Amino acid sequence: MSIAGRKVQPIDTPAEYLNLDDPLVAYRGNPLIGALGPIRSKEQISKLLTVKPAYDPSDRELPAHLRPHAAFALREFFLPGIAHMAAVKEVDLLIRQSYRRRNPLDPGYRRQWMRDRKELKDGRQLPKRYEFIPLGAVVSGPPGTGKTLSVGFSVQDFVPVAEHAYLVDGERVAFTQIPCLKLNLFQDGSLKSFGREIFDQAEQTLSIPLARDWGVDRANGNRIQSLYFQLCQEYNVGLFVVDEFQLIQSAHDGARRALNYFVRMMNCIGVAVVVIGTPATAGLLKENLAASRRFLSPIPPYTPFVEGQVWDAFFRQMARYQYVAEMDPLASLSAVVLDLSGGIPDLAVKLFMLSQMRLFGRKKERLTADVLRETSKLLFYTVQDRLVELKGKAPEAKDIATVAKTMNEAFNAIASVETERVGAEPIAGLEPPPSSPITISAGVAETMAGKMKKAAKADDKLAALEALGVVAHPA
View 1 (tube, one colour):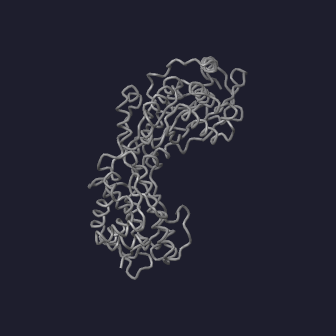
View 2: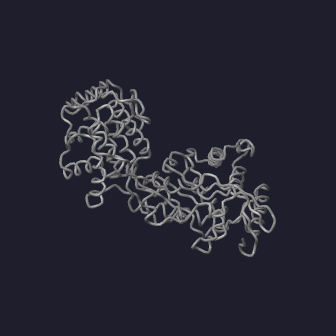
View 3: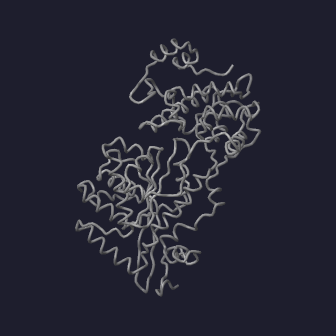
């Protein structure tokens, strides 16, 4: 087959990688784009993001010891909103823009790649070839609004590693492609930590000791930059996804330095970057105007549900997953769940599911507003002084991700207790209840005695039972 006047023949490589039938002429003949598959339509994105676990109304008639396993499927429930859809569309665009001017089958690009490799080995800076190509995006919102989930869905269909080999005018051209690397937080904000994280993730993806072979541990800051630039070019990395970015503010000047690393990669290598974080992330970008212009994107902030048609549709779909014998009218339950969860989808699902689990095996299995409120007290006990922040209704603190993690631990603890109470087999993913002391706010730990004293002072019998390790149940 012919591409731009060159005879190209795949060698043990899917022919569709050549992307000759792409509706966009600019993408044709570029195997790095072809390996990503077709651009997804609005309908395909909606189907990709919508998760409705299997459910049968007869599940509510199962014995009490089986129903926790049925109910736990509700944890997977997810319905996309405008922001989730926009994030997937933006990822599709950014990664293709990253590869648009990086075609290994183009002799001109291969010559440029060889020159860059020599420049990097000699310790010289690369020109900013991609400075005016939009390659960055920010996904921001309170914990539990589906940021990480939606971006994860957007890259899950990309092959982790694509091996390419072609005959181009009789010359063999072979290369490896890593479409996406997910980076964990490099908390000290140093260049070496950033580079080391890139190599660690590439090693896990390729299952080869890259850091050792490339001498990463012996490299200083400037050298490590040259090394990760080389890695991005050598393995044709298209996109970096960086989660929990707001935590970088714990490092002195860490956010500014980290953003500078990303901007350099975009400008010099052409790699796209998607940053995920709480609303504080957007604030960090605003403080760095030079970097913020590289992260302009049409993805709106992820926000909690508010009263209205969108929330009503979400709750109706979630309420289909009924595992107890009876429920109060949906309208009354809907208002209570919205109020208690603050409209955060993850909190709403946890509260609705856990409230039902606490009723399994009881003489009266009816989900009421009172049961929801009791469950809310248990679920949010360890983070009660931070609930306003957790629900995205107040300026957040730096440790909001830790607060969310603490609440998740409380959910697992209560669910584990309820599972054991009805004699159910342990559920995969549920951890045992956390032991005292329990962190309830930044830098504060509370013992059992402290919790009992607080409960007595407030004349809160429910809290007293909790302090003793006895989970209160509906009558």
